[in-house]
Image 1 (cartoon, rainbow, N blue to C red):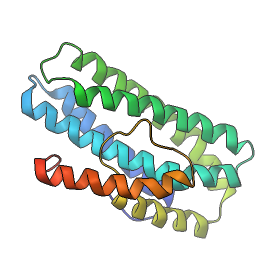
Image 2: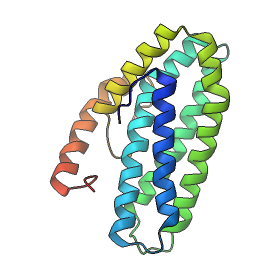
Image 3: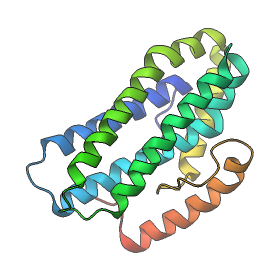
Length: 186
């Protein structure tokens, strides 16, 4: 969840972790509780990652990169599609025939988003920001991930200031629910 380093290093490490979980899902021969545990794990990681990007990365993109508003809006729209897929996966039973196509759609959507960030957004950010700024953003992203929700909330605000006000409360409720149910502990 928190890896250290500047914001680009932090988020790229998150990307590798999610890709690793997707690899485990693709390698599975069955389903059941093992699949549900992996879906929960990837959901937790993606939601925390998205919240942190929306709270700190995209405002920095708007501030530091020429055309940043358009770029940030596109990235937030990507997050919205992913969050809706996560919400659908949360509701689908493990043996439902929709599980596999929804997972594939999620993996495709996330792969395209990661590719765009790593090949376009991150190089622009690295060029536009000082190393100090990138390190500060990394610290803020790590703190945000620690307080972020662990479940998709597609109707929640995704831009400051509302997202910064509401996310910690939703995160607290989600973590309490996870504790009681044991979700995310495997």
